[in-house]
Length: 231
Image (cartoon, rainbow, N blue to C red; front, side):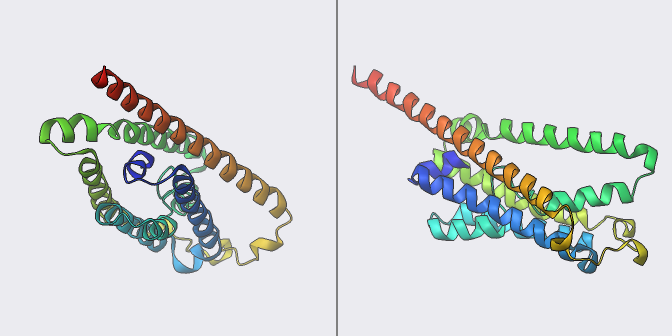
């Protein structure tokens, strides 16, 4: 994503703003989810946020307007790890409610491994534009990345349809288990908000640093190529 935005001519500051605003959108929507999920419905929210992320891919495909892209990054929670902000707390709330007590640790381990494997495969797939689309189909760099973003939008719609198949057990049907208190009045709110802020800051800074290093490395490779041609 950062490499594509760099190809469009955005500065490092603009890239940082794009990713930071996307992370902020994810954090904000995750906070909203914590307040309304039991009243609106977990399945309904998961489907909604999955569908909201799809227009982000379409925006990256159709436009290079920075402010429009930033808007979609916020709405679609498009930070460094994709639209995980509002979805992850919903998924982690569903898992223990649909699993026997003795199986919860195993299920969360599988959930974590599946997420890490998916992230690794996604990072590997980021090399497809250069390997497949450019070499095999003769597309330029920008066009090849746009194919990836169109595919992202398509798969987000598919994921939303799969979430529709979740059984009613994912909802909090027992009224006694529904929490109707005020999140801001919890005695542990300071600790929770501190950890959340540290996680966002550290994750965002690390992400921007890695993206910057990758772009510098790529610029250096292009520079070396130009130097060889001139020589």
